[in-house]
Amino acid sequence: GAGVSQSPSNKVTEKGKDVELRCDPISGHTALYWYRQSLGQGLEFLIYFQGNSAPDKSGLPSDRFSAERTGGSVSTLTIQRTQQEDSAVYLCASSLGRQGEKLFFGSGTQLSVL
Amino acid sequence: AQSVTQPDIHITVSEGASLELRCNYSYGATPYLFWYVQSPGQGLQLLLKYFSGDTLVQGIKGFEAEFKRSQSSFNLRKPSVHWSDAAEYFCACYFFDYKLSFGAGTTVTVRA
Image 1 (tube, rainbow over the protein chains, first blue to last red):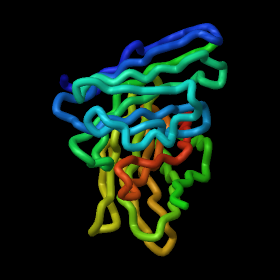
Image 2 (image 1 turned 180 degrees about the vertical axis):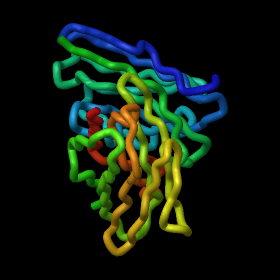
Image 3 (image 1 turned 90 degrees about the horizontal axis):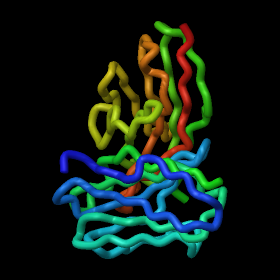
Image 4 (image 1 turned 30 degrees about the horizontal axis):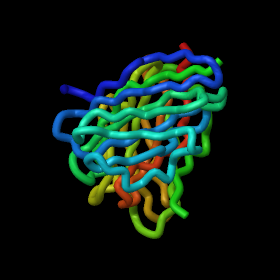
């Protein structure tokens, strides 16, 4: 597609429920990133995919968080048993190859856990 | 450890006044340096970047940034701000580890 697409743009859920956030990167971009933006915290790196593999999952805050990527394209970030502290904007970015300096960002998913 | 620091959480500036946002990094060499802007409800937009060469970098929307190796800094400036410059600004570094590392951001409020 023309840009990085994320859905939904907004998600409100109840504490304890599972949520799935979707990212559709720019066509041909092999690298995909997830970041979390919490109030006053800047952008926190969560996970990096190269193709369908995730060489670096070090940023995932707990085992409630997981992500997958299929077909070298769409990625899903899943948060199980959501907690209020999970409320944040989740941003996805993609880039060509291993070019972490040339990221293209989506508009993000605003997650609110009540 | 590698890090990016934006010392100012919030800055208020009058329309037409100049703006300077500070950014410092900690790294054993010179990283690639970036400034992004995020307007309310919008995604991140790249303002400018520095890889090497001339230490004064021009970007979009009238912004510029200056790299100072001796201070490990990459400060963003604009000579005259417009109300539309009200946004959150992020400094980012590429420490050659495949990802961008971001500062905590500076929120800019523009008063009339």
